Length: 189
Image (tube, rainbow, N blue to C red; front, top):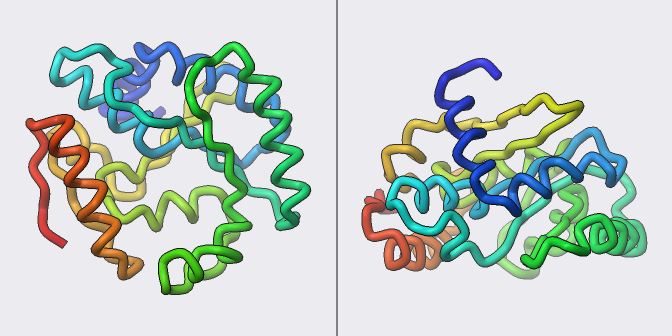
């Protein structure tokens, strides 16, 4: 890890036992390109900052991976494998192949997602730049992916990522987060 903020991030998110378990086992899925990402990372940090239970308010744990096989069957096989690997983890873990996102995104959100060549492409397009963070652990070494940096996360500043025109999604997410973690400040779209 290259920065003090990255080291602090890893320390904080590991206080969440579900993050720790997922990170320690995710490599068993057999993909080199994967990230634990989104709410389970950011919301663990916000809970820590507010001195709340580290697990509070976290709805699910997103595990992104990249596989050029975009068939539904291939992704379903990975989801089933993940259920076995994480059978004792009592939270919702959403395992998704980022290569498949362009297949359904436009129908759901009304705009094309664009080509995907790696798992981090999904993180790059999160509507909120502040939570565009991925963490993985390979051979007991942590890697952090944060294309917009980590400062706004630790400062409680929610900032939009306008790479995709999904202002409504940003507004919906930030409203919920602000009601759950009142210390957050939302930058308008």
